[in-house]
Length: 154
Image (cartoon, rainbow, N blue to C red; front, side, top):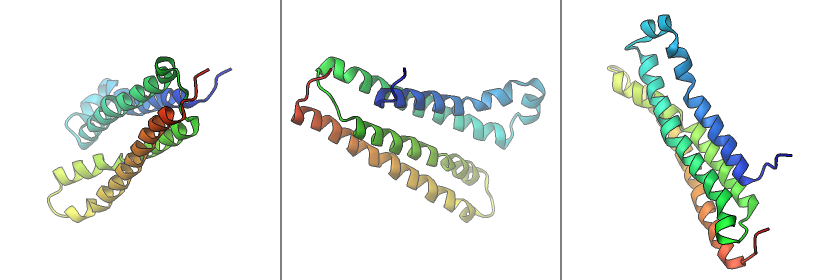
């Protein structure tokens, strides 16, 4: 039976983020679609989406999955699974809310008339960054509590 503890949540998050980031590949591998979409906003926007999700977020989620999995094995101490889960959900929600940054960046890059139209996307993505950043102190508090409580691992 699969236990949905903190390392498994981060692993599933890694798979989800990698899959979302790779969706552009499905659209652009079809030859006719690739020819039609070449040098369009769709291709430029999805390439940025692919880069952020596959190279950045998937790496972050993978690193935390490995960290939480091997932490108890290396230190022989148990971390708080609740704090690890809160850290995961804040990170996943923050990463998902950061998606509009791609829209804002591409819109500001190509807009010639109305730059104010993209300010709401910039605000939403800033909220996502704050949500993601809220998980980082929880991670460090969890690691500090490990060494203060000194509970041995199973």
